Amino acid sequence: MNNFVLHGNIIYSKNADELNIIENGYAVCQDGISAGIYSVLPGEYAEYEMIDCGNKLIIPGFTDLHVHAPQYAFRSVGMDCELLEWLELHAFPEESKFFDVNYAKKSYSMFVDDMKTGFTTRACIFGTMHTDASIVLMDLLEKSGLKTMVGKVNMNRNSPEYLCEKSAEESLKETERFVHLAAQFKNTKPILTPRFIPSCTDEVMYGLAEIMNKYDLPVQSHLSENPSEIAWVKELCPWSSSYGNAYDTYGLMNSKTIMAHCVHMTEEEMDIMKNKGVFAAHCPESNINIASGISPASRMLHEGIKIGLGSDVSGGTTLSIPRAMILAAQCSKIYWRYIDQKYKPLTLENIFYMATIGGGEFFGKVGSFDEGYEFDALVLDDSTIKTTIDFKLRDRLERTIYLGNKHNIIAKYVAGNKIF
Ligand code: GUN
Ligand code: FE
Image (cartoon, rainbow, N blue to C red; front, side):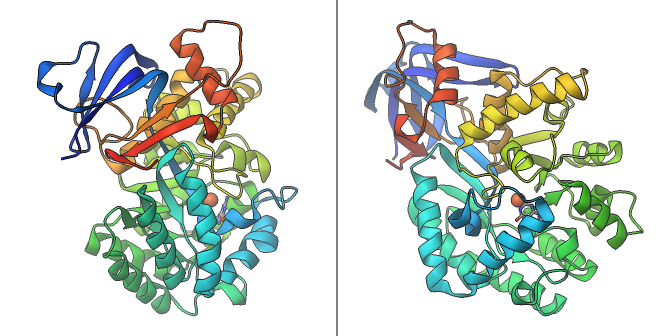
C-alpha cells in the first residue's frame, strides 16, 4: 500500500476563484488517493510514513492539456511565422523525421526527460502520424511515471506529400493498430488526434467518430486558432455554420474532447463547447508567438466552459505550465483593456485552478487534495527566490509561479508514486 503523509504548507483550489491554504498542515495519501487535508493529523494515519517538508509549499501537480512532443527539438525557432506558414516551414519538415523510430527515440527522450523534471504531472500529447514512433513515445512516457494521453496524428489531405497518409482507409486502419498497440501501457492512454479539419477528410473524421464510440476513446484537436485557418475551414466545410459546428457534425464534440486554442470563437462555438462539455486548452504563449490572437479565456472560465492550460510546444517555446499561467493572466489583462470589459482579467486563483483542476478534470478526479482525488503533488522550495520580506503563503505561491523554475521543485508525486 502506498500510504504516506506530507507535512508542510498546503495550497490547492477550493473553486475557480478561491484557494484553500493550510499552513503547517498534513496531506494524507492512501494507496495513491488523497485521504484529505488536516491541520491536526487524525490518529488513524499515525502509522503512515511522515514526510516533513518543513516550510515548503505543497501543491497539486499541473496538467498540460495540449503539447506536441515531436516539435520539442525545434522549440523557439520560427517564431516570426504565422500558424500556416509555421506548419509548412517548421512543424511538417521536423515531424516527417519520425518515420524513423531511432530518430523518434532520440527526440522523444529529450521531451520526456524535460516533462519528467518539470511541473507537469499529467499531459495530453500529440505525436506524429507515425504509429510506431507514437508507441516509442508512449513507452518512454510510461517509464517516466507521469500519467498521459498520447495521440497518433491523423492527416490525409492538404499536407506535404512527405507527411500525408495515403488514404482515409489507411489513416483509420493505422489508428486502430495504434489503439491496439497502446493497450500494453497502464499510465499512458491513447487519444484520437485528427490534426485539424484542414488535414483530415470527412471520411477520416466520421471514421474516427466510429472508432471513438467503438473503443470509448477521448479526442483532441485544434479549434478556431488563427484567422487564415478559420477561413480555410469555411471553404472546406461550406455545409457547416462554424468550425466548431463542423467538428460537432462529425460527432467529435463531447465531454471527452479537448479543443486547443479556441481563440476566435463565435457564439455558436461557445454554446457547443459549453453544452457538450468540451474542454478548451488555452495556450497563450503559442497564441502570441504564431500571431493567432488572444483567447477569451476569462469568459470561457466564468461562463462554465471547461478550460485548462496547454504549453502547445512548439507554438509555445517551453513546457513550463507556470509560464502558461503567467501569460494567461497577462493576455487576459490585455483582452480586458482593449477588447471586452465584461469579464475581469484572470486572477492568481483563476490560473492556479486552470493549471490544476481545470485541466486535471480531463483525467477524472485530478488536480485537488480533496478526499478521493488522485494524489498528484509538487513540493516547492521557494527559499532560493530571494527577498527581505516575510510573505504570506498566497504571495509565496504567486512569487513561485512568476519567478520560480523547475529547480524549485524538490519532490513530485503522481497518483502517490514518487517521480523524484
Ligand atoms: N494546427 C494544426 N496543427 C497544429 C500544430 O502543430 N500546432 C498548432 N499550434 N496549431 C496547429
Ligand atoms: Fe497545437
